[in-house]
Length: 157
Image 1 (spheres, rainbow, N blue to C red):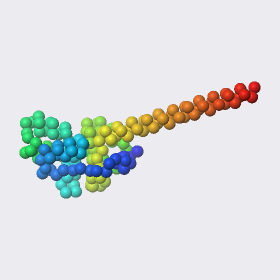
Image 2: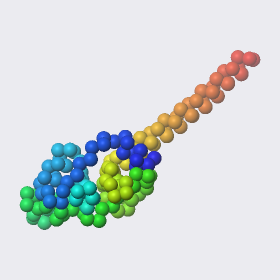
Image 3: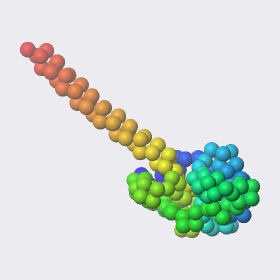
Image 4: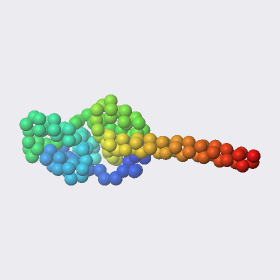
């Protein structure tokens, strides 16, 4: 499955923030929307990402204050992103390798969504459950057919 298919199954809401917003505004928006990151946009251009982790490491631990620190001062500037045609498995490997939890999805230069490690895990677990269900039906169907054949053979005797 591709990221495009995964995005189609998600809530299409996409929240972003400006680099000129305060960190307090960013954290409040993340809390309000129950999300862990916000893409940082300069107009239509993705220029960074801010996460709860950035807040903890770059504001709290450095003794800065949320109302006076700007998003642009603590955001990650080298944003690791994916394209809609990439696979869920590739994105999971990328998140693991780069140690990130959120991947913006770009179509060309346009931000069309964001996927989290939770989104990917939910999909992978769902797929595994489906595969297990299919295998169980196959095994049960095979066993049922075998027992039916045994019953049919013994009734002929």
